[in-house]
Image (cartoon, rainbow, N blue to C red):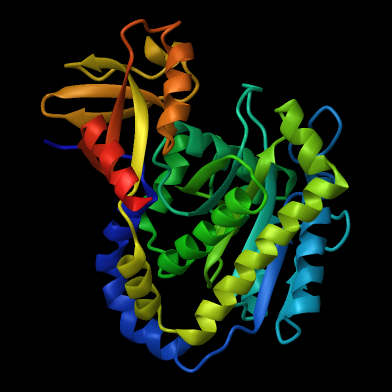
Length: 369
């Protein structure tokens, strides 16, 4: 049985083989180091408004949040140097943002954004690291954020012919290996945990995609999507002073926890050992909506019915699912709506990247709790 899934942990495992080549260099470079500098990047700005909602613009929201994050760090972690890629409403090219982080020898790069999508019902916070876009949705997010380069002069030369709207251009990210991917994923998971546990936001998870702003950063880097301006309720929250304060506070706490881990165990291998030792099996539920001996072409059949569709291969069949949740009750609620479009849809379960029975998944969750 072969299963192709969309879990960032799969990408992490895949990267470990390459990381071994760099371990001796990376470990010695970080040995006896402490966390000194964080670069905070407020996405878009100036002539680039980013996503536009009914009552707000992305560039304004993310700048407010970025400045709040920096203020929290300066007040509570006085030994950490905070550098902004922009502290006012100005346009900064994508390659210059990473350049600022590299010149300041940052220990961490955080790029803050807000999302938009054609379906207003979609909402939630997610954090990206540089890597392969495992789903069409991740690719679309990357395309949206990368499209800003067309506002730059001679962008085809600067970015070596990269076309933000061409899927073929993203092949370069399949050839790149980010030696900081494990720390980036760790930082991203801290951010998402804070969003979920402290702010009560819907957790859309840690994901990978080809973001130009992260490509040239020579340190652990994450791109945070605060939420969707296309969802009316979520836009009101992240556009409000209260919402921005909560989101900034969550990002700050993630930075604080990351710094503590960095200072205590600067070696990348030590961080990975702790994460692996404490990791519990990841149980998730999805709704199967189709099964076929031949792959279904994107844009047809189930792809036309649902905005989120994932495929995995099991034995000799291609199987298609929609919705994803670690909460069994939530997935059952989603099933009611899915059945309105696909009457024979049903719930399936996964342990990490392996298909298991739903009863087994529920037993494992009960044991974890």
